[in-house]
Image (cartoon, rainbow, N blue to C red):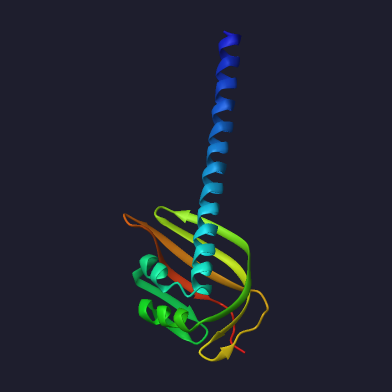
Length: 148
């Protein structure tokens, strides 16, 4: 009887450890995916690759910047006129709730928006992506970098 009890305990501990490892692996995969989505967005913005961005920016997209809100078309226009210098993305935090991945991160970048030069100081950004039949769609963005 003691042997069966020990076998049960060992199997239970093994299952708990494996479940924790599986959760950690899923979290790492989601973090990697969220980071990859943001990195691709920045690559496309720097290259002014609007055709690529149009494929993954959602029809109901909304953003907020210090100078106001934008819908999909207004954000695309902003990106078209964006003059990005070198940038550094850091401090990624990724969470997933069902089909939505939310990514917060910091960016240090030399950029101009609406003819105003933004500070080089790292600033927080937030983007969210929705999993759809056609792939991941960029649904919201918050630029928390103050205008000079």
